[in-house]
Image 1 (cartoon, one colour):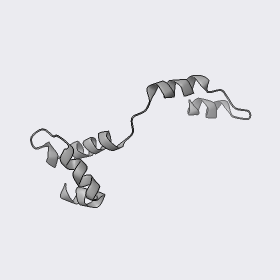
Image 2 (cartoon, rainbow, N blue to C red):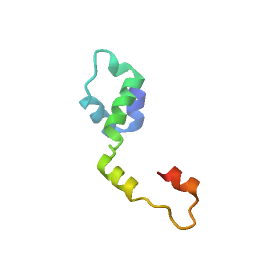
Image 3 (cartoon, rainbow, N blue to C red):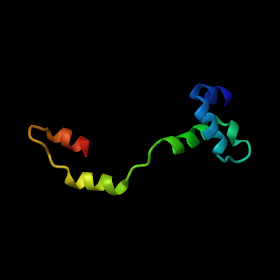
Image 4 (cartoon, helix red, strand yellow):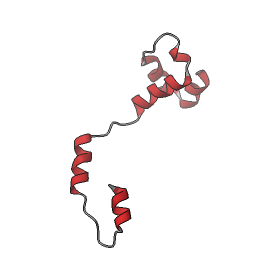
Length: 71
C-alpha cells in the first residue's frame, strides 16, 4: 500500500489516514481502493438525474438508437 499512497501524493496519505478499516483490511488492495472510490468519486444527484431523464426529448436529426442510448 505504501507504493500506492506514495504515487498518489501527499494528500492521499492524509486521506488514507482518515479512513477506518477492519483489522488487517488496510493492507488489502481492494479494500483500500474501495475506500478511495467512496471518497473521491462524486455521488450522483438522483433528483437531478430523474429531472434530466424526464425532460429529455429526441433532437432533430437524432437517430432513435442515439436517443435511447443517451437515456
